[in-house]
Amino acid sequence: METPANKDGKPALVVIGNGMAGMRTVEELLKLAPELYDITVFGAEPHGNYNRIMLSPVLAGDKSIDDIMLNTREWYAQNGITLHAGDPVEHIDRRRRVVRAKSGIEVQYDRLLLATGSTPFIIPVPGHELPGVIAFRDIQDVDAMLEAARKHRHAVVIGGGLLGLEAANGLMRQGMEVTVVHVTDTLMNQQLDKPAAELLKKALEARGLRFLLNADTAGIVGPDRVSAVRFKDGSEIPADLVVMTAGVRPNIALAKTAGLHCERAIIVDDTLQTYDPRIYAVGECVQHRRATFGLVAPIWDQARVAGAHLAGAGHRRYVQQATATTLKVTGVDLYSAGDFIGADDTEDLVLRDPRRGVYKRLVLRGNRLVGAVLYGDVKDGPWYFDLIQSGRDISAFRRELPFGQAMCQKAA
Image (tube, rainbow, N blue to C red; front, side):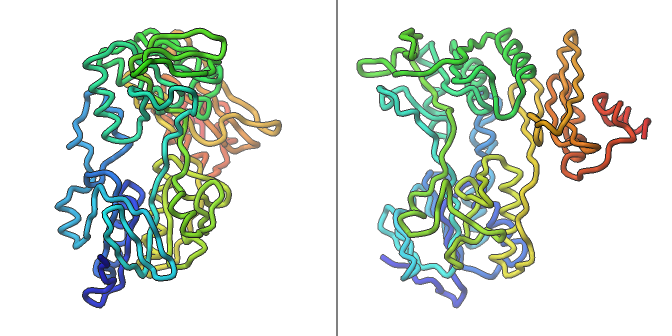
């Protein structure tokens, strides 16, 4: 059955994806032009919009699902938005400007916003389809992990990045014995340098997590449910639950079959428009000037720009900025931002205080700060981040820089 686009003469906006990026864009649009469109939203999950970043505290038992809801069903109703939750779109007909959902519902659009996010990368090793092998991506995954923690003992998390460590910490808090398996020799290797990663590993081992670094998963073992993980060297460790956090892939299947231009993700310009001028895209499914996105800060910026253009206030351009990372594992303080690896034309300022468990590495290019890794003492993180983004000359307080904002203000 097809729903006409303009039941009351308004143009129709259809949003595919009921996650954080799509709904933030709708919120930005409503601020600027609340009455402009008839809005219909399709989401794969059977809920309103929730804060995916807060799934870790839910797993750890610090928050409930209700605590992390961003837009309840009432919010959609109050704003006149038609929500089809648990009914993903399966087909876009760009010629007729119609989308078709799994249930068979068809809705016409004048403007379409793609916010299809990303899909967890499940390493395609033998046994990856066994019961007990899951990703850490949505409320259903968290439910499955909590259920496993009630009945089972051994968890293996594959992937020692930000998400993997948060999953491991949550499962440990739920009483499981957890081993984190990582393919390189450095935990959180996209956010940390080696010394900071080493401090992190020690701190987490002291709490009871186990780590296998430089470990290449060869297969997942089990007759009818996972029972062990096997590595390339032939060794095995017991596992009743395997959580894959080895990265995500932009979810572009729908856009591709609709004939939109995609590379690693859906190609957008500085206004977040795809090659089809009626279709915009935001969030983890987009590629802008060769980059893809997984952190919230750039996605909020994208939402602001796309919302403005959909509202007809099209003077904004999306500009990529440096991003910062904070680890949400209780008792471990970590912050990294910008280009913290450095190059031939950069120099490092390093402060180490092993007794207090503090490590700071600041990367300078000339008289500008371009990157920072902080471990143990992160209170100046946002200030360093501000220096990175503004490109401010730091020569007046260069020597004091590792000691933080208070010292630098005295020096300057």
